[in-house]
Length: 447
Image (tube, rainbow, N blue to C red; front, top):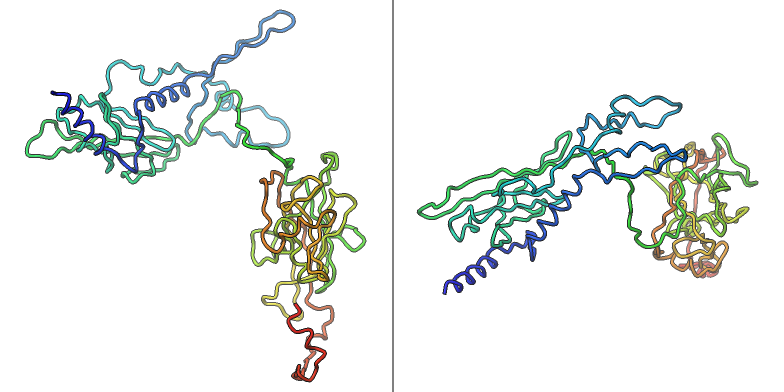
């Protein structure tokens, strides 16, 4: 007969302790053991390495027994010691001590003698707390046990569990320290009623997350997620060069007048690094009045993964064929930003472009499309025009581009007018009645 109240109590406990914000786990004991095991392995020294013997038969020195990682204070990060510089120099003693550290024997978590009444495990984004049920004399003690403001969310025959993410609104307090980041809370037990069978208590709990580590683990094994279709290139492997109409590089500061044709070339100076069957693509280009590509104002010339959108405004803006498909040229008419401009104004401008490398066969995500005003269609510079049909909408990427970088040209100057007397011109126009000129009606709405 005593089993019936026990079963009812278990059902009542499960229904009362379920929390939408907590980690409601089917078997918290297994989770706890798994976390203990994982943390114990991380704290143990790295496996000893067997070194090969030399050909002469003499034994090599034994591999040093090092920890997998070691938490260090900010004062011992020694980043400046390993800063690349020219020449050679010996490492300071602090660096030698850091590199030659010896693993200290670390007892496994949970290996200490005795039964712990309250335990805490600190994971990267959560706090695991459990307390033995034998602490309490009343069967409904879980009702008055809270982690901050959050209730017990799981119970077993041996423990009450409070498993919560640090982002949960349980009253976690976050503090930043030079050497670590801490999250703290309080385990409260505050029974109600006219009498007490256990004394109330408040147990402070704290998780410290070190900011700096020295890692001695040998080897990293990343998981490959999908395929990489682009060859990785350093950002400095491409150049964006202003040129004259003959294809010669413009050195120094060149002055253009409004509307004068300008030419640019994107290439890879290190031709030995090129792979066969590849092609340079200009995904985006824009003009700024500052060397900083993040500055404003800006005027976009190429966008949408290789569409010469300025070609719809000015027929001088076009992709041009280069000496090879690993050289991409384009042109546009000289322009200036209109804010604050006058007839005698001049502006110093910069071109910034996003570059990628792909296969010779273009796609909607990698192409060079010019606008043809005669047919009002887009045409690919070398290949099938069908990849350009998205230029009037949004061109999607089938795969993320691995080899993409932002490059900038040196500056050039544009003057608003090539003749000083333009400022003295006072244009006068008479109103035009279109009804009197039937031959002009065909131009209406012809944009």
